[in-house]
Length: 206
Length: 206
DNA sequence: TATTATTGGAGAGTATCACTATCCAATCAT
DNA sequence: ATGATTGGATAGTGATACTCTCCAATAATA
Image (cartoon, helix red, strand yellow):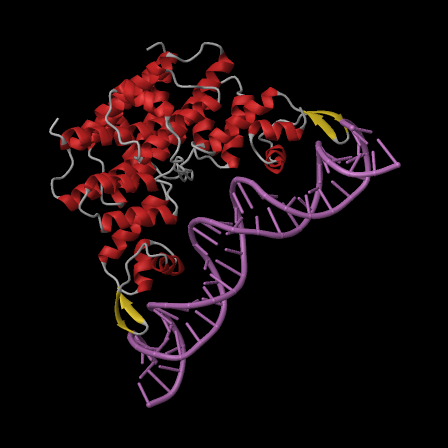
């Protein structure tokens, strides 16, 4: 399969495929001469993954490259790899200054109330802090009770997810990293639809 | 309060405040002369809301304008207003062609399995379809069982949210529209942290 | 074999976005 | 009186995600 066939298979302009190659999201094909290389089905699947991450998941090309890099080359510490993946996911957070004794007060309080184990360097802690601060800034702070309710439901979801994690290390990384990124839009859409369902049932007196 | 004081109160450059005024995100101050206007605390709060929406929530200025417009001027149909708000939220979806008899097969199957009421024109249906298609394209399709598990948990969250919706129409719109947008980053961060918690407990043999 | 088409690769061009900077005459503060 | 500030308009900036143009080398076809 040459580049034009690959582009046709992925339903993209050739220029865009070249762009992904240049940016290192897509592995080069096997060069058969100075001006020819062949691509196979793995390249088609990779492009589909790139489009999934830059489309519905909403990652930039830069962020997608990081996520793909972690899946390609996970390292031996699943925990650290997942941490790096979460750092690459939006919303972006700037790291706290070293001298701040309590950089994430809202997140800390929330996680303590939930009784959850957490690593303060994990990017999601800063993301939670920023999200909670945003609800306050916007004049709609989240109550402790709501936070506990959310935390409890999401913890159950997390247990469901982890129970189904593959044993084999490489598959586990792929499952965890891609599952975190790819399933998030599904969760948001389901929540929006659940709101609509509940509202509709109440309006009908159900 | 003049524009420079407003900018200082919001910790933003004056040029940025002018930009929000130009873009219609921020209501003009009361003009006291040809080259002077006064702003008050409502403008400070509005800027905080704008920053919350364009920051952690990740909306573009365009999308934030739509959301703010709905909160400012909700119309009398809460249902339709929420629909418009969800349309403005990412991920963006292009509307299905009119002649397609079954534009959202995956979303339809999922919602039927969950027994949920839904309006096919609701943007979240298309968003769910795109999210599910993305998981398939990426080679990690969501199983029916997982979809049911997610749907069930999120439905409980939605019930919690709707039980706490204010009665008064204007407050209800604000609660629903802003709650949908502002609480989503909290949910994603909590899920990521719940994954970490569950993983850590399992690693410790808990 | 001649000729046309396509390729990989490099470079530059384009459109959008979210600011950011510069100007201006009018007005305010001192 | 004089310098600073204002609202408003216009233009400039840097980042992002493509998209286009060129090129000589090679492939495909006549």
